[in-house]
Amino acid sequence: MSSDGYKSYINCQDSETATAMMNVFHNDSDGSVGNDSDLSQSSISLKLQIGMTFAYVIIFIISLVGNALMIYVIHKTPRLRTTTNLLVANMAVADVIITFFAVPSTVMYLYLQHIWLSGVIGDITCKVVQYGLTLSIAASVLTHILIAIDRFICVVFPFKRVTFFKKVRPSYVLTWCASLLLMSPHLVVYDSAKLPNGKSYCTVSRLEYLYFLEIYYVLVFVTLYLIPLLFIATLYAFICRKLWRHKVPGVRSPDLILKREFQNKNTIKMLIILVIAFTLCWLPVHVVHLLEYFRPELHLPHVALLLSFWACHSHSAINPLLVVFLNGLYRKECQEKINKKLASLSIKRSTGTNIVLAPQMRTAISRAPSPQALG
Image (cartoon, rainbow, N blue to C red; front, side, top):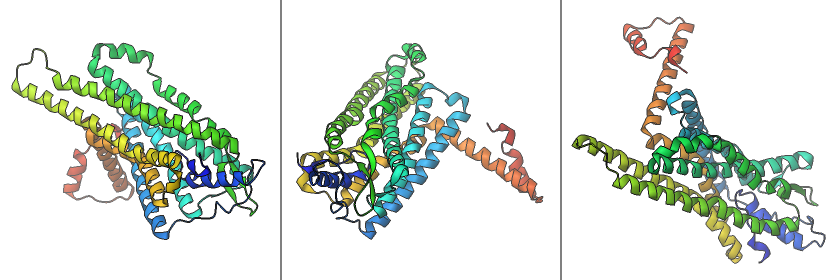
């Protein structure tokens, strides 16, 4: 494979750095960093910088607010603390971490490209960013698998669900352990490499690591996209088939039958949307990766690389939106929590400033839930 064939799987900072570093390595017999001509040969247009910055700001706001609210509502609502919702909260934690790592590092790349901090601080931050981002992505994907398993057992084998998940209730902890192991190579292969011009770059610092990562990222593609997608789609297909054919035993009321059919159709629609969202968000980055691996002569433009990474990072913002719009119970609890909090803040503000309220306002506040109802 040519030196241009290697591209990073997750982080857009590496997509060009790795190729340039391969060229640099080939110019140095000792397998260490030599010159920086390849690393400084390209730049990103101002229009693309502004557009992608705005796009990532949107991701940051939606993901941070949406996932934080989801974690808060599940934590504060006892009836939502089910196995499925605990897994959803675990996924939300992973998505928040993805957001904190992906957005700042990508925006920094837009304006500084490959430049990184030097010295010990540079080495540590390089490893932390690379490892933290890929670790949280792996945890999010693995949690998707556990949620699919939970839904499958709940619908297809409802009587076995309690017994099964009593044994694997701490499964959300296992997702992080598996992710720690799967993504551990990032702690070894990435460093802050300093070139003769004095600039440092967060990249793979040795040639043998690059050859190892070519195989490693193919395995990551299979284990964190191809297999999860096929597995989740298969389980959801069984669920849809079960719900579509399910008849409520002993129920002859047309209203109850229609209500159950409506609920089943909504569930089927939700499952299909979840699979489509996962597929569309993660497919572009894998297509880019495979094209760069097998067709390096294409030399994909910056916009293709950046949009593909924006798509996969946006999945962290889409997840909470899907939960809000597709889960009626969560949406109801979310609205109640927000209304209670706003009412509480309104009462505290009026008390603290000694404002005399109009009769209509006093009536509205008296009907609102008390601050003690929170929590």
